Image (tube, rainbow, N blue to C red; front, top):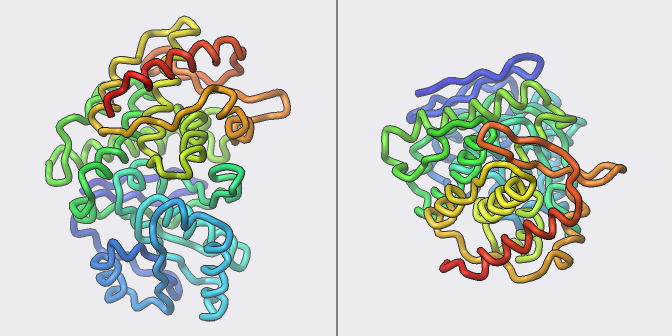
Length: 344
């Protein structure tokens, strides 16, 4: 069992292991859980006797304002007071939305995350970002609202389909590119029942914690965690969210690697291509640069002076900077060639 600690002023523990004990809540609990992980939710219900338990089907279709309103109204109708805690049990879409519910209800109540997918463990549940999507783009509405604790019960990962397990580790691979960590860049032998999984996940989470501690509200360095995400979010939107987030990020990392090469950096395409093959990512949606430009223009890294890109010049050397359109189009043309020849 591993414990990592986020430093003040947003201090809280991140537990990773098996047989985690439910902490004692500070007030009444609203449990928001994905029915796919009902066994874990039942254990938590027995432990804390929540005032209200709400099912929330995981998936991007749930990350919308109508569902957000429904959850808020349920808490209000249950009379949850200011010292209540929201407990989110599920994958990244569940922790994103439930965390935003906690950030908004009564102008902010405490919450705890119980991530049950690899994606949620290494990324979505860590760092205090919460929110929902709009038809115009992903994660355009939300709040920075750190949890009171994160509890990654690894037994829940054994219920995941292999494809979902591997897809979620794309974010850990991304952390390896940011930190220059060769261990994180080699997830190939991992499986839910392997003892190497716990230290691997802890290593990936530690990278994110270190970045978030230095830049909680994404004014600078934290933007590096969006490596591969600018194109990825456009691919997700263009596919109607049929393309899973991890797979979209893997394709986005390939574009980022090609962009870094175009700008004179190391050629990082080979390990990313291996990642795509290992995750068995499906082919991305068809379209040229102009087809995705509208989605890209709404990226959260956009500023009045223009969009900044997260560019990997080498493993461990990732920069956030504006990029000339000619370089973007050249990298996209190379990316589209890889996609056209991809066997997935």
